[in-house]
Length: 227
Image (cartoon, rainbow, N blue to C red; front, side):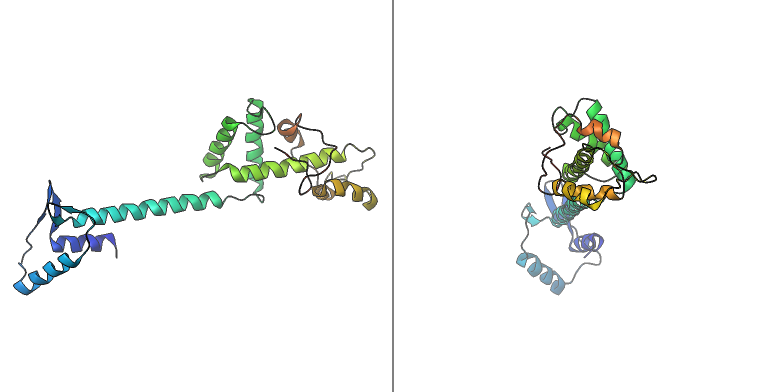
């Protein structure tokens, strides 16, 4: 039932909040005895959560219910926006914006160790909210940070070996399957570099450089990553 219909029924029943008491207001034409008796029975058999001056305050109940419904809907919408954020498959423009924001925070001194400090994360989230007009938590950013770091680590690891050939257009690594076999055992994620190069390498150097050596073993899914 809509709020307008509910308020109309409240007006028909004659319950209005005036001062310290809810005063019945007589409507015209006045109800006959049978109709008045029916209303009395209906009111006495109802369970009112709030009464003023011994009489049920119908409008307070209606407005309270409407406020609760609106608040719940707004909360649900915000939660949906948070968890709709992609963890891995970001559009290219969003990924570029994210990397730029990370570079700015690193240059500002907000990556003192293996990841951004609370101020750096706060600044990145604010920029993402402004850019996308959606709510964000750090969880999808953390997943993307790890993905970028694994690719960067794998790219650097491959370049600890000499004699690498590249595709003239894509700059992908062109080597024999025998050469790739051992490398992919260490960093399975490196297989993407058979088709393309590491995008924005210089910026990723700023984000991840001086954090840990690159010629080490893999973590759970192919990149040595702790941050």
